[in-house]
Length: 117
Image (cartoon, helix red, strand yellow):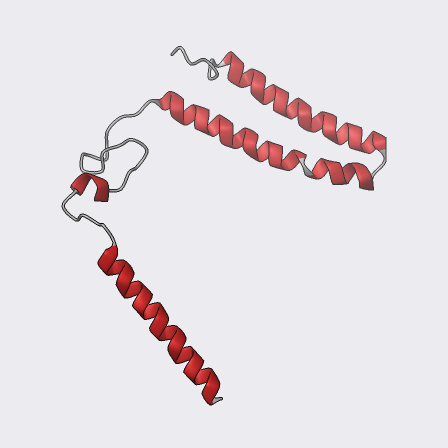
Protein backbone atom coordinates (compact mmCIF):
# COMPACT_ATOMS: atom_id res chain seq x y z
CA UNK A 1 0.00 0.00 0.00
CA UNK A 2 2.87 2.33 0.81
CA UNK A 3 4.47 1.53 -2.54
CA UNK A 4 1.33 2.61 -4.40
CA UNK A 5 1.23 5.91 -2.51
CA UNK A 6 4.93 6.56 -3.28
CA UNK A 7 4.38 5.82 -6.94
CA UNK A 8 1.33 8.09 -7.11
CA UNK A 9 3.25 10.93 -5.41
CA UNK A 10 6.13 10.53 -7.88
CA UNK A 11 3.71 10.53 -10.83
CA UNK A 12 2.01 13.70 -9.56
CA UNK A 13 5.38 15.41 -9.07
CA UNK A 14 6.53 14.49 -12.57
CA UNK A 15 3.28 15.68 -14.16
CA UNK A 16 3.39 18.96 -12.21
CA UNK A 17 7.02 19.56 -13.25
CA UNK A 18 6.12 18.89 -16.91
CA UNK A 19 3.13 21.27 -16.79
CA UNK A 20 5.26 23.97 -15.15
CA UNK A 21 7.99 23.57 -17.78
CA UNK A 22 5.49 23.76 -20.61
CA UNK A 23 4.09 27.02 -19.21
CA UNK A 24 7.57 28.52 -18.89
CA UNK A 25 8.89 27.36 -22.27
CA UNK A 26 5.81 28.02 -24.42
CA UNK A 27 5.97 30.88 -26.93
CA UNK A 28 2.60 32.49 -26.42
CA UNK A 29 2.25 36.15 -27.22
CA UNK A 30 -0.72 37.75 -25.52
CA UNK A 31 -0.25 40.98 -27.47
CA UNK A 32 -1.57 39.55 -30.76
CA UNK A 33 -5.29 40.28 -30.55
CA UNK A 34 -6.15 38.82 -33.96
CA UNK A 35 -4.67 35.39 -33.21
CA UNK A 36 -6.43 35.16 -29.86
CA UNK A 37 -9.86 35.98 -31.29
CA UNK A 38 -12.20 33.14 -32.29
CA UNK A 39 -12.71 32.42 -35.98
CA UNK A 40 -16.33 31.92 -36.97
CA UNK A 41 -16.84 31.00 -40.64
CA UNK A 42 -15.18 34.11 -42.02
CA UNK A 43 -17.21 36.56 -39.92
CA UNK A 44 -15.36 39.14 -37.85
CA UNK A 45 -16.29 38.43 -34.21
CA UNK A 46 -15.67 42.04 -33.21
CA UNK A 47 -18.21 43.50 -35.63
CA UNK A 48 -21.99 43.29 -35.62
CA UNK A 49 -23.49 39.82 -35.51
CA UNK A 50 -26.39 40.91 -37.72
CA UNK A 51 -24.58 41.18 -41.05
CA UNK A 52 -26.41 39.71 -44.04
CA UNK A 53 -25.20 36.56 -45.73
CA UNK A 54 -26.24 34.81 -48.90
CA UNK A 55 -29.41 32.76 -48.55
CA UNK A 56 -28.15 30.51 -51.33
CA UNK A 57 -25.39 29.14 -49.05
CA UNK A 58 -28.03 28.35 -46.42
CA UNK A 59 -30.14 26.47 -48.99
CA UNK A 60 -27.14 24.48 -50.22
CA UNK A 61 -26.37 23.57 -46.60
CA UNK A 62 -29.93 22.37 -46.06
CA UNK A 63 -29.78 20.27 -49.25
CA UNK A 64 -26.51 18.73 -48.08
CA UNK A 65 -27.93 17.90 -44.65
CA UNK A 66 -31.08 16.37 -46.11
CA UNK A 67 -29.17 14.15 -48.54
CA UNK A 68 -26.60 13.29 -45.88
CA UNK A 69 -29.35 11.98 -43.60
CA UNK A 70 -30.91 10.09 -46.49
CA UNK A 71 -27.60 8.41 -47.28
CA UNK A 72 -27.41 7.35 -43.62
CA UNK A 73 -30.87 5.82 -44.06
CA UNK A 74 -29.79 3.89 -47.17
CA UNK A 75 -27.05 1.95 -45.33
CA UNK A 76 -29.45 -0.24 -43.30
CA UNK A 77 -30.97 -1.44 -46.58
CA UNK A 78 -27.99 -3.76 -46.92
CA UNK A 79 -29.00 -5.59 -43.74
CA UNK A 80 -32.65 -5.47 -44.81
CA UNK A 81 -31.65 -7.28 -48.02
CA UNK A 82 -30.20 -10.12 -45.92
CA UNK A 83 -33.29 -10.36 -43.68
CA UNK A 84 -36.13 -10.19 -46.22
CA UNK A 85 -36.75 -11.65 -49.61
CA UNK A 86 -35.80 -9.86 -52.79
CA UNK A 87 -39.28 -8.63 -53.75
CA UNK A 88 -39.97 -6.84 -50.45
CA UNK A 89 -36.47 -5.32 -50.45
CA UNK A 90 -36.93 -4.11 -54.05
CA UNK A 91 -40.25 -2.44 -53.24
CA UNK A 92 -38.87 -0.64 -50.18
CA UNK A 93 -35.70 0.44 -51.98
CA UNK A 94 -37.63 1.60 -55.04
CA UNK A 95 -40.03 3.65 -52.88
CA UNK A 96 -37.14 5.28 -51.00
CA UNK A 97 -35.20 6.11 -54.19
CA UNK A 98 -38.35 7.58 -55.77
CA UNK A 99 -38.76 9.90 -52.77
CA UNK A 100 -35.13 10.99 -53.16
CA UNK A 101 -35.55 11.63 -56.88
CA UNK A 102 -38.76 13.63 -56.37
CA UNK A 103 -36.91 15.84 -53.87
CA UNK A 104 -33.99 16.26 -56.25
CA UNK A 105 -36.26 17.22 -59.17
CA UNK A 106 -38.12 19.68 -56.95
CA UNK A 107 -34.84 21.35 -55.97
CA UNK A 108 -33.78 21.39 -59.62
CA UNK A 109 -37.07 23.04 -60.69
CA UNK A 110 -36.69 25.67 -57.95
CA UNK A 111 -33.15 26.48 -59.27
CA UNK A 112 -31.65 25.66 -55.89
CA UNK A 113 -28.79 23.79 -57.55
CA UNK A 114 -27.64 26.77 -59.66
CA UNK A 115 -24.54 28.64 -58.51
CA UNK A 116 -25.11 31.51 -60.93
CA UNK A 117 -27.60 33.40 -58.75
